[in-house]
Length: 89
Image (cartoon, rainbow, N blue to C red; front, side, top):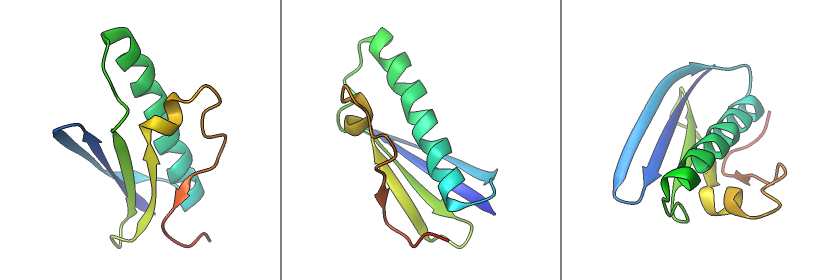
């Protein structure tokens, strides 16, 4: 299935589309890993990423979940506690 990632970074938005993954869980893991990488880059750049998010949708425009960068920034991270907005397979 194909997935779309919508990034909200303060006043900017970005979209990455047509990412082929095997499941909703794989899409959420990919979104979380991307958020972790962006947080790491942002720390070095001195960015405040507390309000940033990534929303994940499937090819049918169904919301799969949302990852808040504020959760990634916590010392213990999310550890898989995603904000589920859709049903899991």
